[in-house]
Length: 341
Ligand code: DAH
Image (cartoon, rainbow, N blue to C red):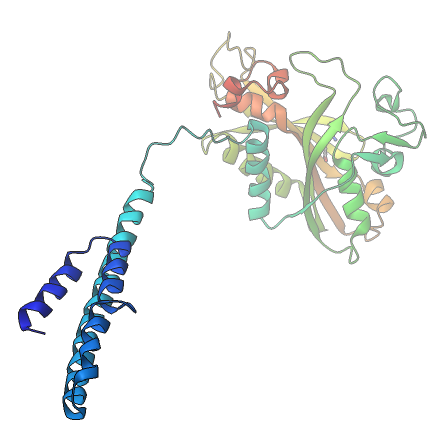
């Protein structure tokens, strides 16, 4: 075979553009009835020496062609692979249709803010049942048998008269105080739904959210209560917020207090302020020093141990913070309303 003939074969291989074409070319030259085998048919008439040297030459040529075929095969394969990659390419930067992500419900947002405040001070967080025994909801908390909140028109009782839907989260305060093993020092907050047999209107719902908490230990005084709740008000309504503590009454605390903050809307200046109704102050929460009877009922018998407690209506705080005029808006699932927070 002349050099030109070999070059022609190599060029034919190189000109192939697909694997099928390349395979046909391979069969044409190297197949059983192919070009090289045909060339070898002349060997029959050759002498032994001629045959050996001719055979060697053919084998060498076949090897050269094979290598070229293999190189071309790899080249075409890579080209096809890249072509497919290009075809199947996904443009990850493409503008997809807008994904609607949710926002935290204002009640959850306010709850998280308050709970985070107490967690940062080292308070534990406890949860309790919404269906409660009257003992944890009333008796242990010094709420006597004749207290009005025990009336059928104030509380949802279950068929068994000892069970009810809790009217406040102070039931968890009773439970946590009772369950503590050491009875030396404890700070805890709880959060959850509470139920009252109220007619729903712009400031009442039969179900709402409360956060209840306490700090008991030796040497705890009213000034600890004041510092803690003043700091809480500043955290929720801003560092400039002033608060005042008015006398109040709860059966489970003595003394009891109602905590007000200065109205952040009019700063105690607006006779016609819609938020504070001209009083200059906003009622935020109830609190007090835990009644000694409550501590005893919950198994805390050391007279040197005192504690303060507090109860916060989360909807009320959220209404004041975000100027929401009607508590029912929180429960209506109106996306336009909820998206604002
Ligand atoms: N449980 C009270 C209520 O629902 C709120 C409250 C007031 C809770 C004073 C307390 C407290 O722990 O010390 O109205």
